[in-house]
Length: 358
Image (cartoon, rainbow, N blue to C red):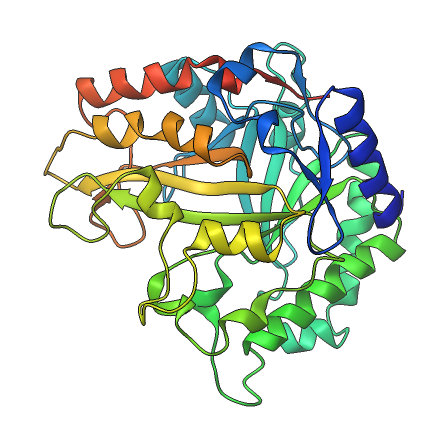
């Protein structure tokens, strides 16, 4: 199914579901705010459409066992029992020529009793550069992936993130192969190549880091691949539960970060005004405290639902759970204290997350 046809199907799905649709400034289709403005919407018959956008409510997901060697499928199942809800989105990570979807990923997203959709991050340029990928030097890698998808995963929609958090990888030097424009060109090339190879079940997500430092860079706007190739816009962002520590705050704070020079909009407002036709996924989020410094995360977890009610553009949230992050000193786990786990379980139990994967 072509990209233009898929957008029409998305509009028809919204109309059939009884929601109102509006045309965004970029010419795309956007579900009206009323579709998921209130947590009570999750009690309706919420289902996903052709681009995996829920007709109401918000999709709930997780990546568990981060920065460990533990199997991601086993870790997610443990996390689901701990949190009290099946994660509709199963987040995994791959790079280069790694073979995926793996057997475990296929099994996890084929469980009729616990319906899940795969969200996979793929660093296509691993061992290469964005510029080289854009020029076609990794087409063999892209085509091999396309062949696998069509043979082993032909009937399942899945989310595909290409090189999440690209800001952190930019080398703003002419000819480096890692300039922001190189990322944009790489992204466009991969998506268009997959389209020509007949891969019509990949729903792609452009996942930003959304850090103040990067948003202030002159090249930041050059990263965006274009509304014609992007399906969802994502954000990977976290907050600290420790007052006075880096990025202390609540759910609104991770959504509203803006350039460190004070110019421009906060991230959420930027996404919804500049790309109003695109659903938003919080593709990684979490509340942390320093390892060995257990802190009450209740306020952070309790702040999620009020923000979702005010921000109808958010259609999915995916928690990243780990006892220690890549910085080595942050505990993002939901069970660092019994009180934290109780608060998170209360959040997870909300009916707004009762979305059926169609």
